[in-house]
Image 1 (cartoon, rainbow, N blue to C red):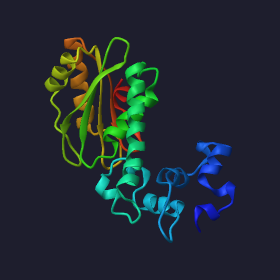
Image 2: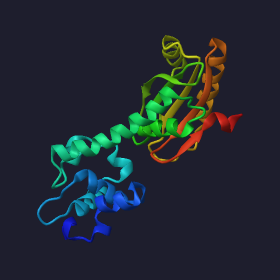
Image 3: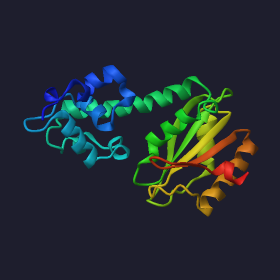
Length: 222
């Protein structure tokens, strides 16, 4: 059934105008972005196929070519979908660059998850903060294997000093989705914390993230 053949209360756009976007399902939201399907498949059915093929935690990090492998998704539609995820990531970063990440932890965590949470290998991210705990720079400094990344504190603080940071937040992902810290994770956190105390750059936290989970190592070892 085509979307225009559905009652107004079941059409994503019309439904959104009445009850708001937050009341729509993921499929309905994606159907609005896709705008149309193709002969024999509505935008809503196409949206459902996309999400069955690439769940949200995967969809936000796939390539244009990956998305275009689905019938009915050509360049324009694929770009529209990926642009939504990019805007979401930039919104979280924008908040972190305008406001204290200590007072807005959700935006920081959202940004970190979107940046490294769903990656297949471990990535170690360093976020530099100024005296107001506002983000001034960030960088993925180390890339490892599926279960390990070799971290060098000297490189962390070389980057932080160059950014004129007064504090840092470190984060890395666990591709397994198990965000419990290993002994190595706890050990390197202690080393970074102590090194930061020597150079005058505080380690605010070291987070482990997956696509939908986060764990604070520093809070767990205090």
